[in-house]
Image 1 (cartoon, rainbow, N blue to C red):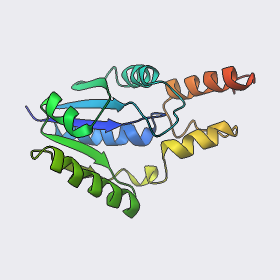
Image 2: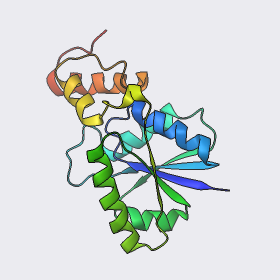
Image 3: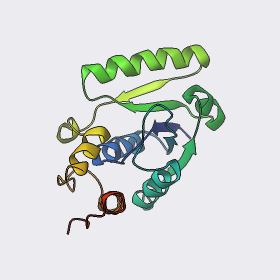
Length: 167
C-alpha cells in the first residue's frame, strides 16, 4: 500500500488544497493530511480548529486521514512511515522554495521523497493568505473555500469585530 503525506498549514483550507488532495488520492492508496502548527505565521485558526475543519470537509473521502503535527517535516515523514510527501506548486517561486525545502529535508532524512503536483488552472491564483485577506476586507470567498470553512471564517470575523456574518 502506497501512502503519501500531504503537509501544510491549511489556514484556511481552500478548494486549491482539496484539488491537490484529490490528485494525491488518485495516485496513492492512502493520504495522510498533516496539519502543521505554525510558529512563524500568525494563523486565523488554531491547530485544533484547522484539523477539525479538514476532517469535517473530507469525512466522505476514503483513504484520507487528518492529523496534527508539530516539528520538522522530515521527522513526521519518518514517524508516519510514508512513501512520499506531496507538495503543490503554483508558480516558479513556489517550486524554488519547495525544492530548497525538499533538499534540506533529504539531508535530515535520506529516504525523504517529494512529489510536486500542479493544481488545476482555476486554482493557480488561490492561496490561503489571499483568502484570509479577501475575507478580512469583506470579500466573497465562497468560490475559494468549502462552505464549512467559509462559515467558520464568518463566525471568526463576527467574534473578532462584532459584525454579523455575511448572509
